[in-house]
Image (tube, rainbow, N blue to C red; front, side):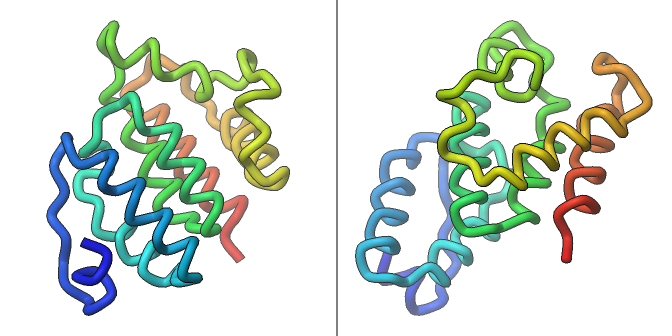
Length: 144
């Protein structure tokens, strides 16, 4: 998969490929090929292909590569996390529940942008367009 991505081939992931995806990212780090990791992140469709349990992990990976678009897509996809299963994985997304463990792998300016994006969102969390609005605010705050 790493070599396929290096050749520019499109990689079609499935939900069960999370461990493989992580291994490919480790290879990207090991061989200093962040451009391959960035391509892989752009090809994740839908962004929650690995399940809601990995959305925060994807957000942290996006932060590592300063990939604002992937982070924005991750935040916007949270509107589909209304189920009981989804809610147990959304603690990070309610910034009033943040703890040190959540924050340690994120750049400070990303944490600030998340907080600001929530604060600037007028509609309540239960509204249909809450998460896409937070995502849009996040992107506008961080975009150069």
